[in-house]
Length: 105
Image (tube, rainbow, N blue to C red; front, side, top):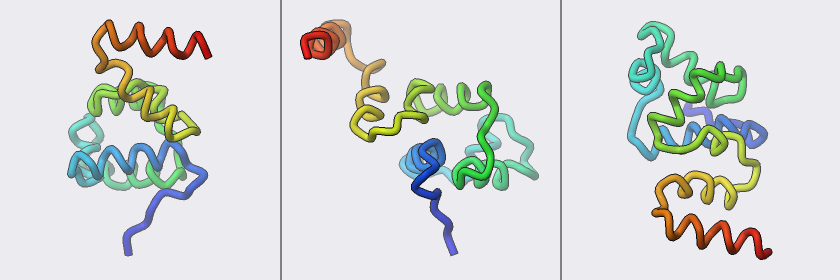
């Protein structure tokens, strides 16, 4: 039976969604990010299920791998998480426009 991250584990929920969208198994993702092959699946499962919080350096590796800022994993609001994930991929003109809109709010 497949377990899903608990609702209170924002980090786990975001990691789980990114991993599934990339079509990666937990063990494969862990190995890609230099975890030991024998423990990669268990460690990734614990991170996704909110049992353990990964070290900061590992969160940085996850963020780099998925092309999102570290902050994406910790945004409580889903809309804000979407903005945080998209922001680095915007061209300068769109970044300025978005920042202007936010500052005028």
